[in-house]
Length: 224
Image (cartoon, rainbow, N blue to C red):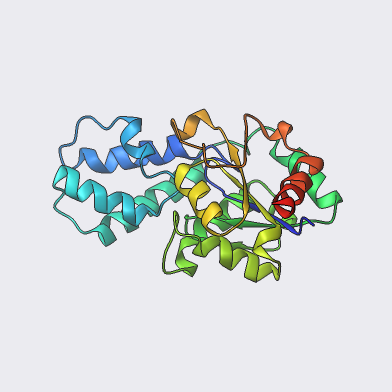
């Protein structure tokens, strides 16, 4: 039986990747980088900002540490979140209502920081839907490793095999599969051209996800 639905945050709960790209580019400009296509950012969607800045230091020869740029980037991003006027992705609230009415547990598992996750959930007034959240700060290995999703299941006290993950990124889908969970790939154009082919199911909208679909993912897995 379906015990829990695990939500990624960036690109699933909110359209955050364009904001990430914008704040990163502002930092890169200080180091003389004049061209930063979204495709460069998209390679790191679903991963820690530490991994992104480590990659950028190597690629662009930045005279700074990954720790320094992660702190600066996170602060710039959080400031942007506070200042910008935007809401959750269309159809999210209705989906949360459907799952909550069924009595199914929900939790957020994101590569973002705890501060970042709390800010978004509070900004959208959706904290009450979830049993809690886990972040990249709570595990040693982040996506595409399964640790964050396994911790989410442990936090809820549920069997990983009875969980469905909703992800918009290649690395997140791989993490869900490696955790032996079922995964719905949410195709978000603002997250770049992500390879979601390993997901058990791909949807274009939160409106496409219903309880029958979630249950059937678990049932089908038990048959094999």
